[in-house]
Every structure is written in structure tokens, then in C-alpha cells.
Image (cartoon, rainbow over all chains, first blue to last red; front, top):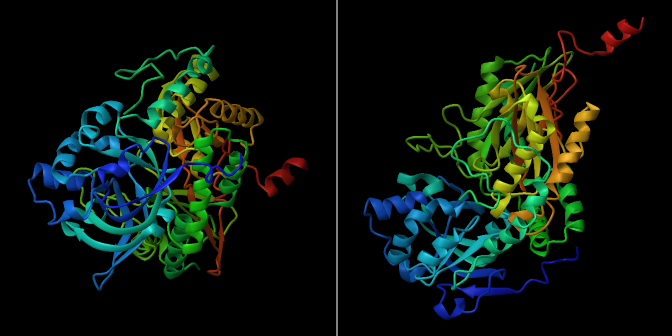
Length: 226
Length: 321
């Protein structure tokens, strides 16, 4: 197939992102970011939402983009940081914290791997005016690493370790990402999944089921695991 | 005599080679797939991944920031001599892991399963894993570093002889469809299948089939080789491509390894080695010289031996006399 990168609609967003920037952003659009983003996953969510730790001062004004990620980064002896690559981690696991997190942080963009359920978009992200961007691949660690220009600060590094700490990054032309869910809660993964599901019955045709079944699992291949 | 320092230095080098440079066989496999992939979004993903590999090699930075679970596969020549013995070899590999984690840098992924303790160096209780194998009539050691994702794309099932090839095909499809949705398996993947053995070995064989054989390699058993190709075709006809988008590029290759198993059972495992298939091998010779390569050459005729004896040059000569 010819180069599909040039054919995709592509936008650059300046951060913190304004509500009107997200208006009309369609699923499937390729996005690059300029500004400040922060990482946050289970370690940070537990710290803030369950243990009641204060958000880092000024975080909400600085950035409204939460990346489900931990960087391949090292802390040097002089206290400086070396960042190699960054790659997303699967977001569906953080569903239970997202409503409270969006409320307290004011985040408008969630970046991660694999998206979240259509119900989470409808019930949590859409009411908060937030969209979901998926990373590509999912291993574009080097391309994303290139987009990180500086480490602004790292919070809870000692307590949570490199992988779970909150890293605040200055980024430039940071991407590519794909719009997975828009302000109306449409989902690219759901749309694509439905197209693929239509072929599944034919695929299994004539293959008899194994003698021993398994408990507690779906037999419907149209279902998702998340 | 192979010295401790030689092993540690070589192991640090293969950690970096694996993390940064995509193996050429897998790169070619994905390049070929990107030419026939008709799914526009799936094709966009493949082309972006190829950009990512170029950026990684040019910048000498990891292609994927998820280190996965970095581990080693060691093959020891029966005549190899290690200055500090096997304990020294294990220590060198653990030390190399810690140093490479800081120097490359790699994300420290390894934590205690309950207390989530992170030493920030990818070393801990039973980590990194080291698999051992042996080779007759050799005085070298081969060390392979593999960094494979650790969360999705793997499954195990006890099938029975009556389930037959149908059972194998269904479980293969089940695993690819379920973990392929949303691209949790980071496909297109090298899919490894373990068949037989005891349950733990079923998992080990499938993992090794995925991570230690190159794209294009076929099992020496002609019928198994045929099944590998049939499953590959089947995987690429699901209608699903990269990231679970509409397309066909799902399986870069399919490798099957077998072990003799319980007469009543046919246990099966499926493993997917991802869009950042990270593996690199070094051979350390008796004189301490090192040769680096991408093909682990793990499954030797000795590894797949059928009975008490195994085929060697000498053995074959005796038989023909």
C-alpha cells in the first residue's frame, strides 16, 4: 500500500489544550502535541485519590494532559534525568479512578494504550469534556522519546519508583497519536471492532468445540476482554 | 577459559542491541506485510512502526519504552570452561541487567508482585529469568537477551487428542482474536505455539518458539511446518490488522515446538512476540572473542532429539559403515 502517513488528517495541538481545540476533532485523526504533559497511572492515582495526597502545586494550570505511561528513564548521580523512550500502558485498568481524576485534575486529554470501554467514554470522559488519544503501534518509544525536550519535574520518585512516579515533560511535536474517542464519545476501536466481528462466524465455521469447557469466560468472540 | 568480565560486557551489549535494533528478519517480515496490507489504518501503524525503528537505531534509544520482562537464554557447549563457573555466569547476567538498565536507559519494570518493591534495575527475586540448554561438542557459550512484553497475548489450554487439529485452530484463533482487539498483543506478531510436554513445559516451548526462532524459519518436521504455514494464513485471514484495526497483517510468522506429553492430553500454549520483537545473541568463544547476531539458533538438532542418542556427524558415519 502507498504511504498512508501523508493521507491521514493530521493536527497539532498546543497545551494546555482549550475546549474549542477539541471541538470537531474526529476519531481517526492523527495528533501531535506541543507544551507540557504529565504521566500518571495506578501509583499516582492511589497516592492522590486513595491516600489523599495533594496534587503537585500548579499542575492543573500547567497541563491538562494525562499520559498513561512510564518512561525508559534513568536518574543520574548528579540528579539529572536521561530519557530514552516513552510508551503507553493499557488504560482500561485505570477505569475505576478516571472519574475522580478528571474532576480533581481537570485533564482534557487522556493518552494511553488500547482505549477504554464505550461506557467509560459516555459516563466519564464525555461529561468531563475529555477525549482519548491512543499511541500508535504501541511501541513507538523512540519517536515519542524524540518529542520530549525536557523533564520539568518528577514527583514521588522515591516512594513510587521510576515507573510509577509522575513525570512532567516539556514536549514538542510529540506524537503521533490517533484520536480514539471524541467529545461525543465515539470510539474508533469500537467502530473497527464491529467491522471485524462481522467476519468471525465464517472464520470459525466447521471447527468443532473442544471436549473440555472453561469456567467464567465468554464464548462470544464478538465480546471484548476489557 | 571464559572470564566473568567478558560475559558481563557481552551481556550488556546484547541488552542494548535487543532494546534498540529491530532484528532484520522481523523488519523484513513487517516491510513485506506493509506492502500487501489493505487496511488503511493498519498500514499507517506499520509504516509508523518502521519510522520508529529507524529513529531508535539513529538515536541509539530503545524502540519501546516498555522493557517487558528482560531475560536470558543461555546455551552452554559441553566443553566450555567458565572461570567463575555457573554461579559466576548467573551473577554476571544479573549485574549486566542492572547496569544496562541504567546506561541505555531501560525502564525498570521489575517489581515484587505483592509489595511492588522496585529496585530500579530490573533485578529481583527470580528476575531476570535464565533458561539453560546445552550443546554437545562445543566449547562456546551462546547468550540471548529477550525483552518481551509481559501482560497480554499469551494463553494456555489443556486440549485432548480427540480435539485434534480443529481444537488447535480454535484456540489459536481465540487467542489472536481476543488479544488482537484494540491491539493488546501489539501485533503483527511472531506467534509461538507450544504443544505437549508437561503443563509448564508447554508454556516454555511456546515462549521459546515465539522469541527464539526467526521469521521464515520452519520446523524440521514437514507436517508441523505445514501446520505452521496454515495457522499463519489463518491468522492473516481474521480480518484484523495492527492495533485491532480492519486489515489482515496479524501474524508475521508462526512457529510450533512440541514435547512428548501425557497420552491422554494435548496441552497448548500461544505466545505473541510483538511489534518491538527484541532479541539479540552473542557467542562467546573459548578464547573470549565475541560474535554478535540476531538469530538465537536455540532449537538445534540436539534440543529436538527424539530418544536417548542424538544425531552427530560421528554418529551418522558409524551408521553408514
